[in-house]
Amino acid sequence: MGSEDVEREVRRCEDSGDVRGVIVVLTLSRHRDDVDVQAECLRVLANMCSGNDENRRVAGRRGAIQAAVDAMTRHGGNENVQKKGYGNFVAS
Image (cartoon, rainbow, N blue to C red; front, side, top):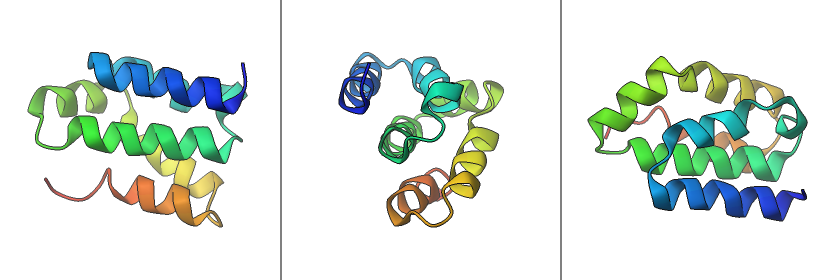
């Protein structure tokens, strides 16, 4: 499965409200080095948690904060990952 396919899957998770699915893709080792997939996961995760307390709780229990920090650290030189990751830490 290529990056574009994985990104589409992440957007399907967003549409269906599947926060867990987004976190799974974000943390899977085969996608950890793909900056496009990581950025899309971070964008979707931020959108899903913005203003949604239940999604925030689920994300927190599933390790989303550490996953976002890890992605941002791993891709420190990628502006897109940094911007999308930052969206996970802005109060909403």
